[in-house]
Image 1 (cartoon, rainbow, N blue to C red):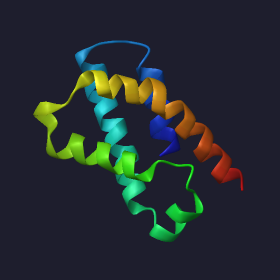
Image 2: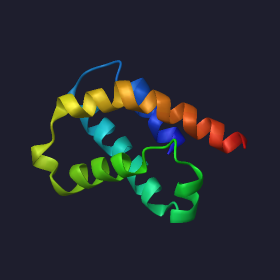
Image 3: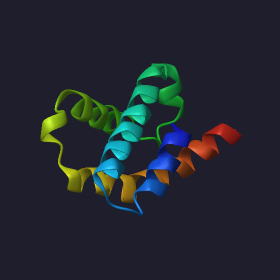
Image 4: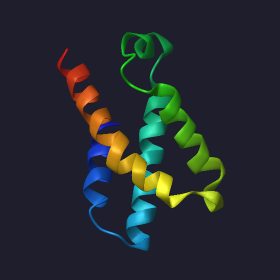
Length: 93
């Protein structure tokens, strides 16, 4: 999750079709990784927005042709930096 989030943030500094596809894939990877985290682990890390992450993953995977790119960009620019911080903190503990 952490690597994909960092990579997506880095990609967001540029704009292109390839970039969009890369961001979609990275956010999907974050969602897939979150899906694999046990419920017990999720409860131990309430600062991570699990439901939002899983919801975004489901939207990207199941409604690919109806993706709102503004929401994707906002997710990468606004939501991933705090997620990276929370994941880094959790990994140190």
